[in-house]
Amino acid sequence: MSGLELFAAALGVIAVWLTVKQNPWCWPIGLVMVLLYVWIFFDVKLYSDMLLQVVYAVLQLYGWWQWTRRGERRDVRQVTSLGGGPLAMSLAIGAIVSLALGAAMAHFTDAAQPWLDAALTGFSLVAQVWMAQKRVQCWPLWIVLDVIFVGLFLYKALYLTAGLYALFTLLAVQGWREWRADPALAR
Image: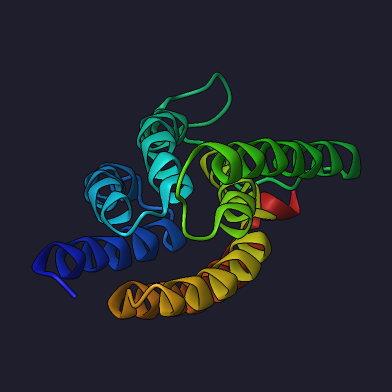
């Protein structure tokens, strides 16, 4: 465990907690966290996760914009639910990204866990886009992904990061509870 990993983990807890509370400051704090994790994952050869953090940096900016822009009928973006078609399409895109990235990592790099890392990356992108759009379904997907991430990070001896993702799992459960109870979702 390094000081960098400790700092990134602390920022991650703050960012996810702010997300659960629907506070838009989750996005700039998350941006700093993901930029730190680019280096951490590069160092342990989890290249798909490293690339995921780069994409997360862009999605942090997108999420901040989504959560703070004012629309015609509302002051900020409201919690919504995806219908069956868009949900299935998003998950299919996650699967395609996972397979393509896994094949590339397995054939062109010395990635430690190319297929698992790629699958976690593909579906994390789906969850992150849903989160930026305030789709309530982001939370159950994060729960599943975070549990698997814990195992991967334990395997790679990133114990603090594994602990962080265990905490992320608990925060995702709380986020799911709070967002499902949001009055905007009932409308």
